Length: 250
Image (cartoon, rainbow, N blue to C red; front, side):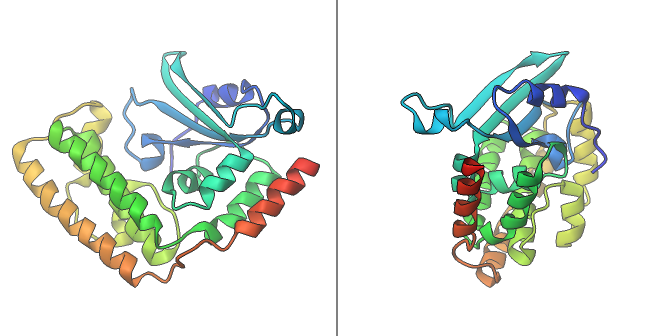
């Protein structure tokens, strides 16, 4: 992952109304196929003060904002610690990817503890997240055949396959093609085309090739799920509960 995080990201996190446990970059920058005009997707976890947790006026579990700053389209989402931990205990690939993103804007000791707990959150049922996500992206591609949803579909399926096989999260598409060991020789060209134009259309022969590969990867993800050694349920519920309680008391 060679992407250089712009200083703007740290400024945005520093401007959050509550202290950040961590903040990372997600979206196409994490997936390895950002274009010059791609959104900067900042994902964070924040801590509410005790008064806003136990009083009559409670603070926001989720902070969300978007807009243009210094010429960059920003999309910022931050979940409060307890909500984020609840999401970690569901088969939710989004939060795992945000937590484990190598594109770190801000970190802390608590972030490190969450990262250490992440393997115990991974289950075979995360396959449903990736199958559903891929299905939605492919439907979008079928409605409007652009390179972007095609790349998203391939990335999502490959991340799911790799997770089912290894219990590890990887989001960079080029890295995933090598790790999973599938023949997708056109991927570097698609990434280059997307880098030049965010809404680059896909021609008819490419659409036919993509359909075959999406069907193949979907079947491979289902097979990897059935053969996976990942557990059916997360094992870190008590660990995350204690982490939240100890953080509150501290």
